[in-house]
Figure 1 (cartoon, rainbow, N blue to C red):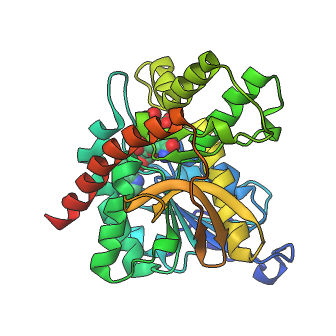
Figure 2 (figure 1 turned 180 degrees about the vertical axis):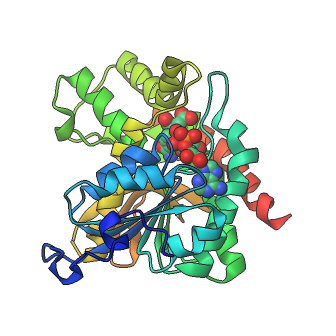
Length: 338
Ligand code: NAD
Ligand code: LMR
């Protein structure tokens, strides 16, 4: 039996042809880790996205309940749940976009790299499934440490002969969301009017906000720059400590993931001028992966933009970021190559 929890489909009472589609092209989206702290609100928000026609929710626990719950929302997407490794292939087959928030989160005192031993294996298995069942899908990878899990995913796809650098994106959107919020607070602006490029990677000093390139154009005192850089780089830790053992950012992450996934889907639809920051295969520095602004389109990442002019403070930050990033990327590569 198909692992759906939609009662009307199971009962045979659905008049399938009557299902409203709203006229827009629908994309098929899978969330892997859909029953988790990020996965649940992410699933809810994706069910509200009019670009989504089919939403597959996969996890190793609790997907029947989450799926039953979300499937009652009166929005267009058809929701199906998939539980456990034996249903992974069914969850992935035919998907246009796969979002991965599967894996363990940090507790106070841990770095994101401390999650490597558990999450590397989870990401490897899930990406093997993607390579087999939906090699053309765009992948949005959220599981930490992103600086290593994206190289792991790339190596899995290379091994399978399916690697397309345009289709693999590490999600760093939460750093941009935080940067917009904190900068807007300092400037006394509406955060929706603020755009802060954040480049590098997604951990500590690898998170490099380019405050000299904030839009609308503005200037900061050195004290403000120190405060903002530190707060943006440690935003994740701020949440981990406030949650005091109950996990890391989930709600703001789900918001950021949906903002990013929506940009990917609008790109797939063919909308012009979709530009977001993401951790992708890159020639912007000497490193094989780097986060910077990218243009999203029908084939995924259509252009990776250079960093633009940096001031001295940012140049120093870039050197620090590259040093740590190089080690994290290599750690990801060698996990698969060894
Ligand atoms: P969580 O523990 O609440 O949820 C994780 C979910 O993954 C659980 O439901 C679990 O059952 C599931 N899971 C575990 N192994 C799996 C597997 N093999 N296949 C499918 N699902 C599996 O954790 P969370 O708070 O949702 O965080 C998830 C991950 O996202 C963590 O690694 C966290 O560090 C990361 N994260 C990244 C960002 C970012 O900006 N990129 C932000 C926040 C959190
Ligand atoms: C974040 O930035 O909130 C995530 O990477 C989770 C974490 O561990 O900080």
